[in-house]
Structure formats: structure tokens, C-alpha cells
Length: 292
Image (tube, rainbow, N blue to C red):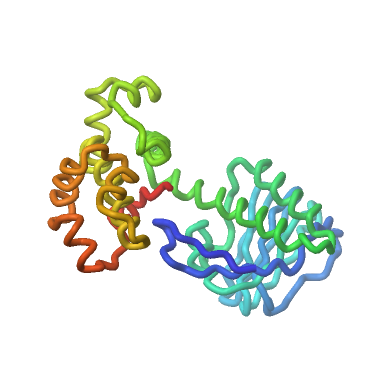
């Protein structure tokens, strides 16, 4: 199954995911060590007990409940349960292209394959759902891949939470929510009073928030977004400038032309004449705030 990811974390990267197997095992104390070169990736979550993992360099990991460990494809590992408290785990084997960068965002590296998992039960719920979906049905790969991406998404969220202070995370979420609302209602007569009331902000804090997060005012954002919509329309249709203005939420065509030129440095007529080919929303994508 191939998934196209476009995000500020991984840009224009084709991620191919093939779920090979999902299983769980309750190891016996005398189980022989597994010693092999992995043909694919394998992600394990330890449900109970303890065990030991040794990588090809001889690095040893003592692994316990609430830990996850990732075995990389084409890498040699040896792992075995503790004899007095043998582990049990649920696991998924998978292969694909472009996965190392994605797994790195999850906090895994070839020289650091074990992670302590916060919110462990939430991960296990997703893994159990994946296990139940591994049923040889025609939709098996789709459902298993969906749960797997949710698992990786939770890992990435945890890594980002470590790097970003709580306030920064909260502000980013608030900005995302505001932008989604603006982007869904840009044709309406949006006012600062309306938005601040909806999101529980004062007008002063609303303006300051946009300046801090996007280096522009709310009005500048809305106008820039509308002009991006206009540029996209000009590129993809034969609509007149008057039609484009109305589609972009401007009732006054002269005002639309002034705003357009102030942002694009040329008039909409000239933009259309030159048949300019660009990504009208690149300015938002570069900020990692493209919600449409």
C-alpha cells in the first residue's frame, strides 16, 4: 500500500507500507534465543515480563513491560526472554520504501531501537485493533495500514511534545483550529469580533497571536488566502477577472485588483496574460500551516 505524505515533517516523500504479519506471543521461559538477520522491519510492544535484545554491534538492551523495540530490516539481532519473568509481546512486521526517515521521527534509530512508551494502553489498543484486522480479508491491508499509521503518528506526537514546550504545542493547535475555520469560511464576511468570540480571545490578543505565529495580521492572512484562491482559479480556468474576484470573496473588483497587486506585485490581468505557473499556496506550506 503506497501512502503519499505531504507535511512539514516529511515533504513530498512517497511512503510505501506493506504489512507482512501481525501477531502476539507469550514466550516460555526456556524459549531459545532468536538469532537472525531481519528480512523486514518488526515493531514489538512488550505487554508483560522482561527480555534481552542484542544488536549486531553487541549493544545489549534490557527490555521490560511498557517498552517498544524496533528491529530494522537486513540487520542482525539476537533476542530472548528472561528465564524468571519471560516477556510477552504484540508485534507487527512490515516492509516498504522511505521508512527510515519516518521511523526516525518516531524516535527510533539503528543504534537506539528501544523506547519507553507513554500512554502505553493507547498504543496497545491500536495494536490489538490491527491484530483483529489481520484476518485475510480483502480490506486487511487497508485496515492494518491505517492502524499502523495511527501508531506511528502517536510516536511522532510524543517526540514533538518532548521538543516543544506545552505552550508552543497549545498555540500551534489553536492556530491550526483558527486557520481551518478561516479557510473553510473565507468567502464569508469574516470579522475579528466574530473570530475572537468563537475562540475565546480578545481582539488585541488575536492580532498579537497572528503576528507572533505567522508574522502577519489576520486581515493580511485572509487577503493572502483569497488571492491564492484567485491565482489558482486564474491558472485552472478561463474565468474573467470579475468572476475570479467574486469567487475569491471580493465584491469590489477594483479593491480586488489593488489587493492582488499589493501581494503579487502585478495586476490580476497581467498574471492571467503571463500564464504564470506557480503554487499559489506555497507561502503557507513553507510555514507548515496549509490546512485546506
